[in-house]
Amino acid sequence: MTQQATENTSGGDKQHRYQEWSRLARAMASRLSPARQAHVRGVVQEVARLCRRYGEDPVRGEVAAWAHDAMREWPSQRTLRMAQELGIVVDEVEAKLPVLLHGPVMAAWMRVHWKVEDEGLLQAIAYHTTGRAEMGRLERILYLADLIEPGREFPGVETLREVAHEDLERACLLASESTLRYLLDRGELIHPRAIEMRNDLLIRLGGR
Ligand SMILES: [Fe+2]
Ligand SMILES: [Fe+2]
Image (cartoon, rainbow, N blue to C red; front, side):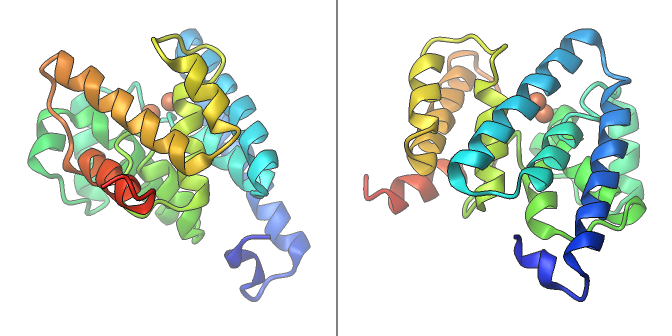
């Protein structure tokens, strides 16, 4: 059970709402390109595995997985317009790379239009691309699943898959460092939240 489950609703109501959000998110995902749909299905699978492993509510995980990339293929202008409508403050990195907003915009949209009040779920969706400091359990699960779902192939992914099922925090650190290296090697912009995620994990794990 999640902390939100206890808030004035019976377990049945709660379950019903999550199933409804899952259905809506799945319908949105069905409009993505075939390749992206395959990725999302992979994330759904991987999130389910990690939820089982770490005692996370699987229905909550399912909503996060189906919803996470629902706006990923929107043109930049549409994403930026929606961000503005939803009152999201766009920073300079996001202004340059509006694709980074597909998580934050989807989370804000779910809060307004689906009346989702599960902050842990919304944060998982909002920060699945960049990560951030002090990530919750579901956030970590989605961040990792996005990178290690069965369709992903990159150097080190096998190690990451192994560590993901042993130690969620350590796997997130490895994943974050692998992503940062990839971006640096390509001379890409790096969002400050990605650096904050890595520093937070390094400090927690006693590395520095
Ligand atoms: Fe994404
Ligand atoms: Fe994704």
